[in-house]
Image 1 (tube, rainbow, N blue to C red):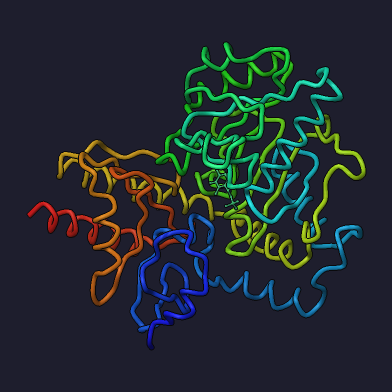
Image 2: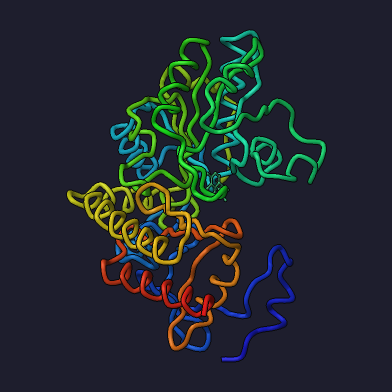
Amino acid sequence: MEFDKQGADALMEITSRPELVFTNGAGSWLTDHNGKRYLDFVQGWAVNSLGHCPPDVVRAINEQSARLLNPSPAFYNQPAMDLAKRLTSASCFDRVFFANSGAEANEGAIKLARKWGKLNRKGAYKIITFEHSFHGRTLATMSASGKAGWDTMFAPQVDGFLKAPLNDIDAVEKLIDDETVAVMLEPVQGEAGVIPASNEFMQGLRNLTRQKGILLIVDEVQTGMGRTGTLFGYQQSGIEPDIMTLAKGIGGGVPLAALCATEAVSCFEHGDQGGTYNGNPLSCAVGVAVFDAITAPGFLDTVKARSDQLSEGLIKISEKWGMKGERGSGLLRALLMDRPDGAQIVSIARDLEPEGVLLNAPRPDVLRFMPSLNVTADEVDLLLQVLDQIIATIRG
Ligand SMILES: *Cc1c(COP(=O)(O)O)cnc(C)c1O
């Protein structure tokens, strides 16, 4: 099939894309417009938690779309209530507000914290976030993010976000004043290059925020829904945050996000929050199917087994080629290279014949791996083997 140049030119140019059109997907594999297949270790940026077009999700879409698409968020619908009950019973949270993207869920978390500050902390509104963090692309979530250059990109920023270095509890404490309402972080910084917050730091933040009477918000857009090997990332440090956001994996490829909060913090009043598509039955029915698959007996054990396999394989590659090791949590992992070969490896892997491999380099010297949570042992082995061959080719 010919590449649709006119179609490509009709789209806004927001990133450099290869001249490929993906037409089909199944599990860990994508097929392009020429029929070439690709092993996918990007999965829509950790979105397709069950792989491409998983039968459970396809069934949920078909059944729900034939029954009810959207009665409006001003009415109850059963899939939204079913998914909210599942999320609250599996977590430390009591209430859920559904959204359509991670950025929108985080906007909701920021609004909820500010509202809580208005009611309980004399109008405190400042939120401490972290250097290199990523919380989304709306104005407030860009302001919350710690990405280099983002502070001036669409100036002026939304006010009230102070940045601390990750894993430095003293730096956080120094930034807290009477106007501070919350600390917000990713349990593992994904876009920054897969940098985990230590368990000690998470526990330290929980103690500090309790002591100061402010909120702890976890952005689990990337780490939630089984990605780290537990259902939610915060569970690994044994803490209970006040607010959590979810997106990416919860929709299994369909736009869906959630803002979860404890009863004490769920202080929105009528008119404070809403959205035309929020909590629509189609997306929520998919969320129920994804939730049930991820919480099925044994599923997370398999995630842990694949995670160990990937981690051990990456350590071997790192040792063989004199790299700097690997890091991550569950099936969100990174190989730390000793040179800025990331972009070259990504493009060689994609162009391999007869089958390509899709990888991501969030930094020039870091490769990130976020396969589907049900990736097979053979697929992980194949990835490791191909990666080793590519590195051998580059290094002669
Ligand atoms: C992807 C991501 C977001 C933004 O989610 P969108 O659905 O792209 O708006 C926010 N926070 C984290 C941690 C993410 O990984």
